[in-house]
Length: 257
Image (tube, rainbow, N blue to C red; front, side):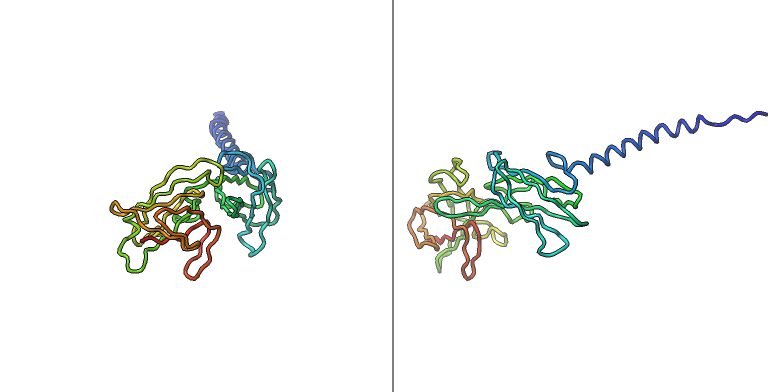
């Protein structure tokens, strides 16, 4: 009896194996070459672009490439005239990129944290991290962190009026900090036991006319930083407030009665 080699079994098994191996290799290459953003990662570098609120290139933004393993060993750069940046990486480290931008507006200098397209860490193999300027919206690091400015509220001593029952209206007085036309905003203070309690959160930074109404009556307002008072206030946010019991950036302290 003559035995035949079962070579056909090899062919049946190898063909699908090669197909699967090819697909796996293709996917692996795609993951290593891409950063999950627009553009490809360049070996050994983190690169990216920074845009303003209108999607135009934003030069002069400050980039911090933070080494997550070694304290105080950040890499620093700024975006160029085309809104782009490139930083060389080295070592077997993991990095996180953040960005900020300074802007002069109505005689004050404000600092804005920029929005990352992704906030995932990357290795020294390289990555692409793009950023954009947003005037409002939640920041990725915390449910209570926003890109907009905010107002810390307080009632006068002895007042029983809660901020959550007051309608505060902010009407833009001129262009916002990015040059755009704002819209009137009406907000109330947040509920008790929330981060927004006695606060008006996430307001696009600009100059506003502020009023407040409670049960159909206009309330008296006072800017605790300037001592200006009245039923109508012209409100400019402060780049930084550092007082006993109050510390904030891009904010205002308003008392109502």
